[in-house]
Amino acid sequence: MARQVITNGAVVNRKDAQTSVAAAVNCRDTVQRMFTMQQQGSLGPISDLLADFAAERDWQQFHSPKNLAMALSVEVGELLEHFQWLTTEQSGTLDEAAKIAVGKEIADAQIYLIRLADQLGIDIITEVEQKMLENADKYPADVVRGSAKKYSEY
Image 1 (cartoon, rainbow, N blue to C red):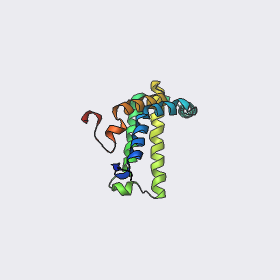
Image 2: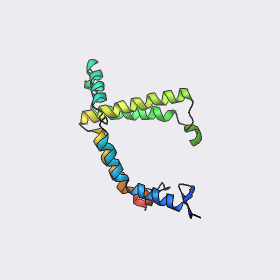
Image 3: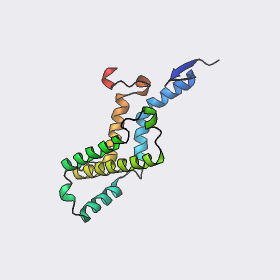
Image 4: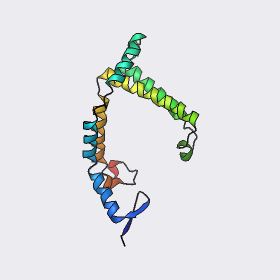
């Protein structure tokens, strides 16, 4: 009989758990391959669309990094309103109307993130790739699995 261990709150065979740990160790390589192989990972077309939209309305004058960051904060606040006072369970089971409203707020926040990155000359795809590589190093799955501790706490 295979020895069982507990991982992420589930009982699994020891061999399966070891396989999971081995896969997690390769997370860094997986992140690199995912971003390298993903040819459609560019936000260029969306960034261009948003820049054109702003230019057609002469809104570039208002799209300083400071203003965009402030607008982003407002949109994130509006997103949070949809979850205020919900239980954890309720927040994961939104009805269709709430999902649509949340989707619109996520889109608003994403628009401001893209415009902010564009104004600062930051490539979001590259930054996400780098951040995920850093996170893979900071939070090795075999060390932090099932824990919410910050990397400085282990």
